[in-house]
Length: 114
Image (cartoon, rainbow, N blue to C red; front, side, top):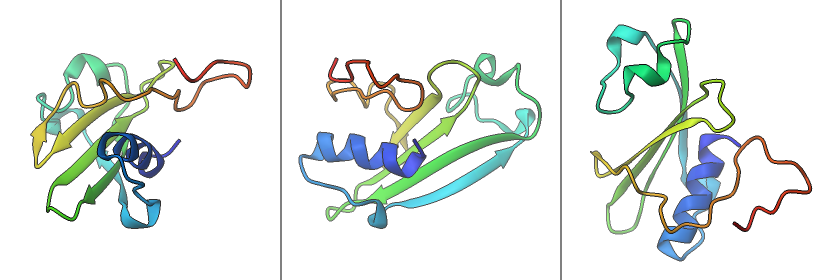
């Protein structure tokens, strides 16, 4: 699932109203390991990846002016690394309480309602 789909999925559940992918801005980010803000991405998450590191990002601004951003990095693990920001502040537990759906690696027979 791309960052736009993930942001739409999570925000729709968090905000209680459908957030259309057409309202979301997506961008691919390229960066070098030494350019990383460790508050966003701890080095242990990316230390095994080759430069340049690619990340998928998506952003959305709601009608109240709140700015939401997710940055997703494929690390080779079953689930990608995600960092969530609201109004430029990192929110480590942003998806807590949101019904989690596996983003990339679930089988057709898995129960995604957990």
